[in-house]
Length: 454
Image (cartoon, rainbow, N blue to C red; front, top):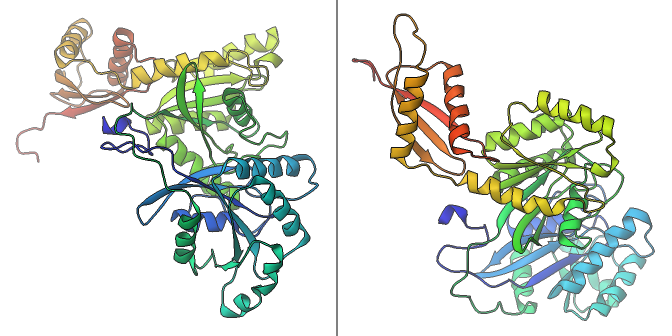
């Protein structure tokens, strides 16, 4: 059972929701760096330019045995326009849904007009607010913090998120303003299935997340690359709770990316590794690209269940449908087993078909064939189509076993090495007889050693 549990569910005890701390402040005061310091790992994307964080992102944290959730937000500014206004709105939603707020200012700059406007917004939330003066790297900066009392939030707490100065004391202070976590729930079912939404930039991942969650959970913009951090959400789809992660769109290989894009690429790769099923989004109105192929390779190499969603289907005419089918046949012939759904995240077309497709893929991902049935299949297959003779010898499959699931792994014990083509033939026949729609399967060969070999 352990391998199916969600990251936030322990095998021997199930915790109720942890209290939530929202980290708010104007752009480039070091909120994401501070979040990384509080959670004890470098997970929030950080770069020395304003506006890197755009959505509100939740991270699990723990200090002295107490669990809580830290929500990183984009920079808040009054009278913001266009995308900046939507980023600010995400920050305001975070303050309304949090149990307490960490208001971060730049200790080297002091209180600004934007900070004062933010305080008015925070007071409307009615939540306890802890004022944090970041970038207080030495005693000289601490000595200049008296002016921050004028914000009316009490004594400013000096920290250096970059160097970790006073971070332990800050965590103690945070626990003092957060409510005690609720009692532990003794029994609960397995946690939600983990789903990663991946695709190249501007393919509609955040729009799909918003459509499924029925709220503006992730920031959407016509400009490609709006999502940087993975956005983690619990969403009810078709009567079941799923844990969806919206990821950054990948433009280049990880080794060719730099800065924010490099770290976003790493986090997208990590989201695929942490997922149980991955929805790869394609733009149906455009040709299948090298980036699309690379993402599919990442998913299959990670051994994850797979659903291909062709988005923006409302923009596809009859001619494009004809050519798209030809492209799928030609470009995706190596994964004919993948589940496919044609959707429109904008209109909601067929998004209700995603949950059934994911369930089918996950059932395949966890499917196990009894050893007796598997060997009956292998015997019949070998007799009907034996391995070709090579150098006067004909290797035989002596025995087969399923070594694991998630994804299904099969080991063929043989009298000699098998041709790669014959191994692919065995895999194809496994699918024909047992299905495995939506899941990769792995077939490996263990040849019997000759006398004297080690």
